[in-house]
Image 1 (cartoon, rainbow, N blue to C red):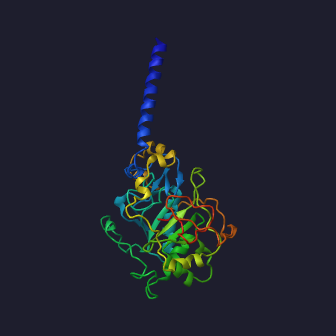
Image 2: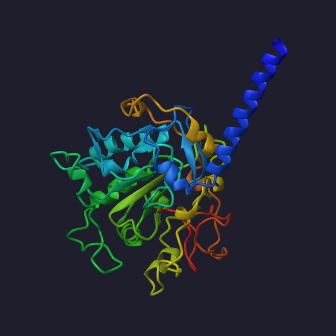
Image 3: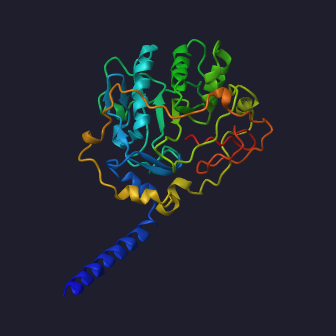
Length: 357
């Protein structure tokens, strides 16, 4: 009798196992952007990033509170204020430091979705909780209401219709101080800005220029800058980018952006973006497990509670320790969904491939 009962239980367990397996097999064909954008809360698990910045997900994320003493989250309805705890702690610290430097508080744009993954609109990257956008516009003296944050526009620093920044009377040195502060953290590996902004920095920064190497030119990014930290020690399955190499980046690789060659690669306008066709099966296998992990009990419970805690610093090489990258390294075609090839600094012809977005 016990054998029959035990056998029945084993049979039921097997049926459940194969049913779940069948569901997951069908699930794997789902568009990843639809599944991940539907997640309202992060997973209650140990923090881990899986995959690459433009092809992955993350577990154990926390949310940047929508309002802080030195920051505000913009476009809150998007629900993209989530990230790896180390990144969220860094944003809070950066906001305090920026105020001390004369900035009136950060307006924070997209970070990641609650569990990462590709987004339904917008970015190619921001998938593993290690990317964040910050506007080139400071908090107003009277903080924006939630409704206003859905409508207020970011302000471009470029002259309309040109590849150059605003004239000298409107270029404020506070922008350079803000970017220098962001680049000062060892955690930060890259900061993407419009090439015109990089050029302006190259022309105007005096004294210590070592931090300029982290400032990377990329199309767009004229009204905000994009901070990217490296893979964290708790995430062995996170795929890092190559080191940026020595130098301040104010060389011929920057000069290329101001030639007549178009910045964006020519492409078939009817071809779908990789983000729009990426299925769950194409993401790291751990991402399906991330989707099944339980959530914290509420939005408030999932927010970052670190306050003024010190930011953990991942082991990183210093600029002087990075290998010298030859300027004759073979160029490559940019792809927002491919890891950076092992050639170091992206160079022109046909396109720099920084995977910013």
